[in-house]
Amino acid sequence: MSAPERVDVAVIGGGILGLACGYELARGGAEVVVFERRALASGTTGGSAGVVCLHDLGELYAVLSLVGHDRIRTLEREHGFPFHRYGSLSYWRSGRSEPGPSAYETAYGTGPESIYHRVRLTGTELRSRFGWLPDDVAGGDFFPNQGFINPYQLVQLYADEGARTGRLTVLPGTPVLAMDREGPRITRLITRRGPVEVGTVINAGGPWGGKIGRLGGLDLDLIPQRIQVAVATGFEDGASRVPLLGWPGEVDGQGGWCRGEEGDLLLFGQHRHTPEPEFTVDPDHCDLNNDAGFPERVGAMIKSGWRLPRSRFLPGWNCVYGMTPDGYPMVGSSGALGNLIHVLGCNGHGITLHAGLAKAVAARVLHGTTTIDLTGVPGAPAELETSWLSPDRFAAGRALRLDPTHPTPAADLVATP
Ligand SMILES: Cc1cc2nc3c(=O)[nH]c(=O)nc-3n(C[C@H](O)[C@H](O)[C@H](O)COP(=O)(O)OP(=O)(O)OC[C@H]3O[C@@H](n4cnc5c(N)ncnc54)[C@H](O)[C@@H]3O)c2cc1C
Image (tube, rainbow, N blue to C red):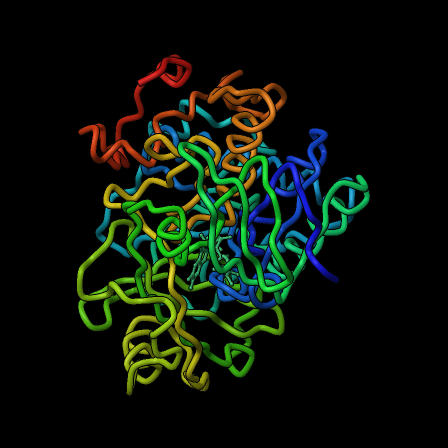
């Protein structure tokens, strides 16, 4: 299919952010084309663990997570979209004190349907349910309303639902190669399938977002980070429906996450909230294999903490995710280039955060506002001010701060920074 001559909104990137923005904008009345250089979800999205869970790293994170959880529950209800509620778990061993509710749970929890809903389990209950836990597990909090989705399915659902509006076109195999600029506007994209005049352009290029920004002459604060995943054959130890939980130790000086996969496999991944220079890579020149011995080192660490004697640890994959210096996403335009809107830097949280960020993009494009309406999202304030996430906050000295312990009052979120 050749590219149209003109489009209201051109979205660059066919990952979760690009498709969620396409869906949101098409539902809001815009004619949208998503340009994806390869296949849908072929970037970070396809390699993601797809977990929808708490990200209590700051108030913006917490509220955007409520929005993401609400969206997945809505898609589950209205479209039968599979949300695998394996839950998430934090456990403690004998001698450790039991944690109380977090400040975030107190602020945003809304009862049994909430993402914060937790069930306290004794050591005996945990061992009978998750036989691979260590013998001295003394108790834990299980969060049954958290889980994971298949990111390929989610991207396809947005593509299909967007197409049903008659206003969303998705063009895989169509890289955007250049942008023509006149003063403060991008006027035209040059794509593999021809030139396209544009009203607005959305940069949803994931870790390639910096390169896309440079097509418009911008230098964005986006730092691509390499992340490794290993896989284990948990079915050989009867490890079924394993919830999301942290590693019991470190590999190469780093902690990480584990979650059960369909088919009773186990995924083990690295994670970091803010960029570290030794993991900064060019996403186009990055080894997608694990480092030599990585799966074996993960296996040795896990087997010393959990009872998985028969599971084999297999090579997984490497992914690159985009990060900002403060670990928060960026949404909005940069400098004078007002019709190029970036939605980037979701690091390890883009599946949970996508719905709120796509709303923030749509609010800017369709209504010229940075405030999003969260009416009906359980536990969330009625509105969220998203200009905190401006791509230019670093140059302006307004970097945000990750704050896992003390949320500020929700009222602050409706104020402009
Ligand atoms: C190992 C791992 C585990 C993760 N687990 C979770 C999780 O459990 N929960 C969670 O919430 N988040 C998770 N994440 C994070 C989440 O996957 C990302 O934040 C999210 O997928 C980013 O989506 P995106 O659409 O911004 O980027 P991408 O999926 O990378 O999409 C960008 C797209 O842009 C395309 N593109 C680039 N340049 C061009 C061009 N010039 N023209 C056209 N197209 C172009 C690329 O091909 C790509 O498909 C995880 C990430 C990793 C790496």
